[in-house]
Amino acid sequence: MTDIAIIGAGLSALTAANILKADANICIYEKSKGVSGRMSTRRAGPYEFDHGAQYFKAKSLAFENFISPLIAQGVIGRWDARFAEIEKSEIINQLNWDEGSPHYVGIPGMSAIGEYLSRGLTVNFNTRIGSLKKSRDKWYLIDDSGNEVGGYDWVVSALPAQQAIDLLPKSLIFYQEIRSVKMKACFALMLGFGEYIPLDFDAANVIGEDIGWISINSSKPKRNNSFCLLVHSSNKWADEHIDDNHNQVMEYLCEEASRIIGYDLTKPAHKDIHGWRYANVEKQEGQSHFIDQDQKVAACGDWCIQGGVESAFSSGLSLADQLLVTMENEKKHGA
Image 1 (cartoon, rainbow, N blue to C red):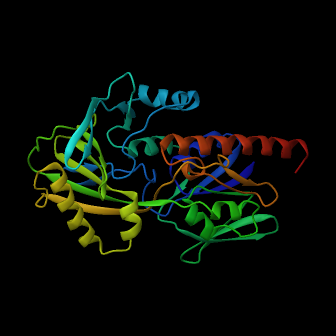
Image 2 (image 1 turned 180 degrees about the horizontal axis):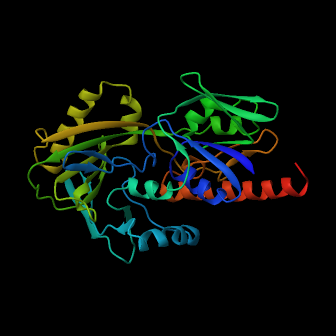
Image 3 (image 1 turned 90 degrees about the horizontal axis):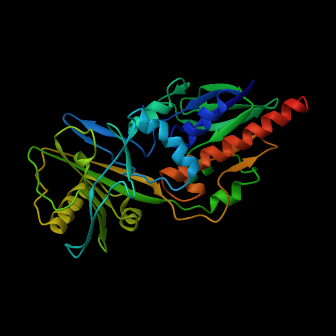
């Protein structure tokens, strides 16, 4: 069977791995301690936060078919939030999300989706791949400690574009194309409170501020009862401040969120911040994945299409489908 290394364990990687696992030996390498990438959930005592992707919708039939069994298994549920748009500290628009236009989340946290999809897969956690080398038509991966693993017939990068650029060989036919992709940063501020805060919304887009999103994470289905508020900075502000002192960023965003909603958020029972250096990307005009058939290296991720959960799925799906065709052709021709 074909041996394939996948670097990264977000939704694109897990989607591709599940499609390919019947026809190839798949080994996933992930730098962190868990799967899911930006579909992650952070827990601290009684508080839990989906600090990356907040929700997703299903636009394509393929994605609907993908999430349907996960809904049946109770891994995905509908978030019927009270949604608002806020401008100049005033709610300018409100509507209730419902079954007419379902918004989905993982249950009991966004990371549950990745955890479910990773069952039965070989995932090496806490392993940051720093470089690749090729020897006798096989790929070898070298981690940051200098350990070498391999050899693989194919290497798939499921990393954000900028991290893929740093890792992959410059000789790839698609290397210059992915160099042009610019992902945007975002800060996630996580606030836990011992008491309920009476807000007029569960989720809100904020217009014209350094903050872009505020939601009551605990309003999502099957969460615990502790009041958890999740604040995302705007991408523009995060791009300008991603390397600033995170404690200072946290205090500033606390003050800004307090001003916007008219409630003092500066003394929570729990607070934390996470900086997503590569959080989002605008719609791309290229292809849904990248592949170099000669060197047997490929790349996928939401950044190939447009930032978001469904884009991550679609990129992993399209890459896996092409690799299946490639492997079948290799069998026919005895490669």
